Image: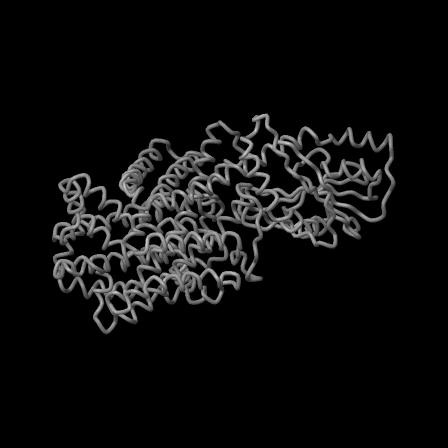
Amino acid sequence: MSQDQTRTGHGGLARPAVLIGALGIVYGDIGTSPLYAFKEAVRAASAGAPPTPIAVTGAVSLILWSLILIVAVKYAVLILRADNRGEGGIVAMLALLGARHAKPGSWAGILLIVGLVGAALLYGDGAITPAISVLSAVEGLKVAAPGLAHYVLPITLAILAGLFLVQSKGVAFIGRIFGPVMLVWFLVLALMGVAGIVQAPQILAAANPLRAVDFLFHAGWHVSFAMLGAAFLAVTGGEAMYADLGHFGAGPIRVSWFGLVLPALVIHYFGQGALLLVAPDAIENPFYRLAPGWAQIPLIGLATLATVIASQAIISGAFSLTQQSIQLGFLPPVRVVHTARHERGQIYVPVVNWLLAAATISAVLIFGTSDALAGAYGIAVASLMAITTVLATLVALKWGYNPVAVFAVNGFFLLIDLVFLSANSVKLFEGGWFPLLLAGLVAFVMLTWRKGTHLVEDVRVGLRQPEAEFLEQIRRDPPLTLPGNAAFLSSATSGIPLHMSRFVERSHALHKRILIVTALYEEAPVVAPEQRAEVLTITPDITRVILRYGFMEDASIPEGLACAVKAGALASECLDDLTIFIGHETIIPKSDHRGMADWREGLFAFLLRNAERTGAHFCVPTRQLVEVGTEIEI
């Protein structure tokens, strides 16, 4: 299904550094699931009673085959093929489907809404993952040092607060230890698992999927649904495979998964199951009880570091998702800081960082324990996985695959997704409402911003002068000629920008040489510099320049104009003494209800007022910038 199987820059399958790097970035989340997933699955299967061998074996079997079907087959084998020129993630998939240009009310418009909800769910997941991961690691103190149990919550809050505080400094120093630490983590998981299996080799019977099926069919639907919802915690984080596709490429991600991560996780879950067969009372915390007493304190330190790495990967993913959403017009422009000069993906988004910090710390304070947080975890990820399956189906159909095979394969996985989603939906009132509330707020902001920008553009179209009319106007009433050159930024590829018309109308003057510059974000992740600029001559003194950028790039007007000069499409003297004019629009909500509700139009106006300034977003030096105000009623 891939359009671009070979990714340059990843170094192929042979580079150990790429494989180890994938361990920390891609598998941090799913790699720390053993801290809580198996415990919750067995508790659900036991319905509050001491765990029985049948329940333990059934839980191990269910987790094993969930990892194989959902993560190994669906994501590693199939979904990774649905790349957008090497980039993955739900926003990249929406761009691939061209949903950005969908008209409201159309099937494509509905698809866009579904996709935006899926993107918003990632923020809900991003708030819960650091909370449950770090909290479950620190809870090892209750096993290793019971006297310190009352310090678990303060220590967790301190770690999370510190993690969010260092984001503005850049995380390159953390990134360098991601892979090696997670390599040690997965090896330790496997060793712990082997030690457990030796105690009760009969746990290997859980490799038979009928053990899970038999238990689910005979346990009663209440217990079965609870167990399915809890077992799903073992596969949360699997979606990071697709989201981080652009950083590593499909090959290294698959090799890391099948070569180390999957075997280590499977062995460890079998080890926890074996432990409960010989010591049912270990259900309190089977992860730490699986380790010998002398190793528990060091294991708490390693687990805490692993969960910090998993949390960092989630935070960085939220930053990247925000940047992509801004470029494609799904979110208002906000300040994006590049923390590493030579690393495109090393960014820091202040507003997202602090909102995510508030949500994560609130989750810890509201729920208090990893057991309680387990009720809030899973429903957002299950919804996202189902949406990803639907979008992947449409991508496969768009690329011309056999519809019968596409619907058969993807229908099978969608059925699995819906089963897990249904099982997680029973946790709605146990805490599942929390990530859904966060996702709902983000999705509403996305949809409001998109609708508002369309309304504003509709108004602009009605007010924008056609080129012929403007040229005739200045021919009849020639404006004064100002020295130097001027560039007027425009959101359209035709017509005269509103602020240019306003400038001529109020000043009766115009610079000697004029550039009308439009920056467009394409559906591709990256646009080659030689394809950056398209130059169209309107008159000998007025030139239109269309700059194209990928949704993974930052649009820089100075860089784009320099590319046009370098390509020979634009004379270098056009950039001499250049003043860049941008429109500063003030939104005035109208009460005619033809656009959005008054309060929603007010929200859009608020978002626009607090968005990053156009000049800063397009990297225009302040000394060259002039803003021209315009009022627009929507």
